[in-house]
Length: 278
Ligand SMILES: Nc1ncnc2c1ncn2[C@@H]1O[C@H](COP(=O)(O)OP(=O)(O)O)[C@@H](O)[C@H]1O
Ligand SMILES: [Mg+2]
Image 1 (cartoon, helix red, strand yellow):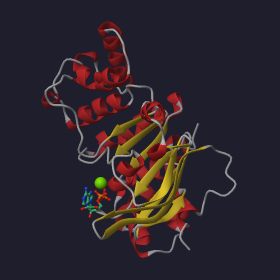
Image 2: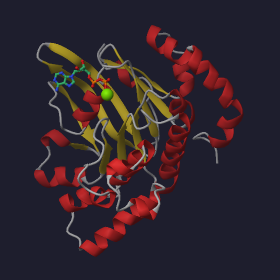
Image 3: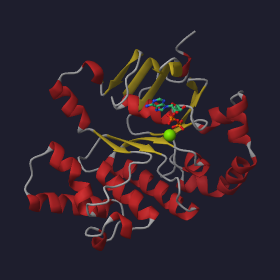
Image 4: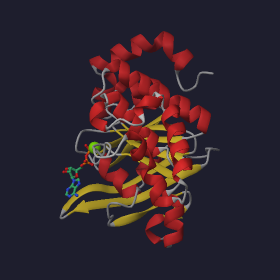
């Protein structure tokens, strides 16, 4: 009865790089997540949705070991972070990158210095090499070279998201966690960001775990979607699975007026630009 979040994984051939099993998280007497199970597969863009306040950020922080859980296990790259040795933890931390929901950049550091923060924390590199690496990361996320010496307050919202993404990519991670990365961006900025995420997945073989409210992202960028509701993963699978799933919130979300508009607009573009294309 408990592990109903894993309906879709069955006999998949793709490697599972995150496996959450029967995870329960409470704050005081209030359960936020209860017996939640979820798999993330290597190389996919997983979109994670659910009502505001449902616990999407809590789950992300729990996966990252920043938030205690009361029950269940979470394995990342086959390692149970909670039980891992210090060396194993350090190794895991270098294989993931994070863009937190409200964790933009350090305002007192330049963009270049922000990107170098994880490098300083985990690696021993010469200043020259760190500069070169950080500039490569900025180039990777589509920021012009002159952004490097700017402070966050001098950047647009879209540039801040890109710089934060460059920082998440600083250590060449296998997976990036993005918590509402396109929130606050205009639709074109958001679409550009989605395109960047797809390009990075294709060129770097990155796995992307993206919490999002953005229906455009879900329709165009995500290979699979997981829905959080009633303290667990209600359903996970491709968009088609969402569209045929019988649950009030899932139905109103994926069949609402806004969703229908996107689905219609996308019919031409999805084949060419969607994750299955090329
Ligand atoms: N450290 C905390 N202590 C107590 N309650 C928390 C804490 N972090 C989150 N919550 C609560 O957990 C619930 C889920 O929050 P959150 O994961 O941020 O939702 P969302 O799905 O919008 O990301 C909210 O009710 C929030 O108030
Ligand atoms: Mg959140």
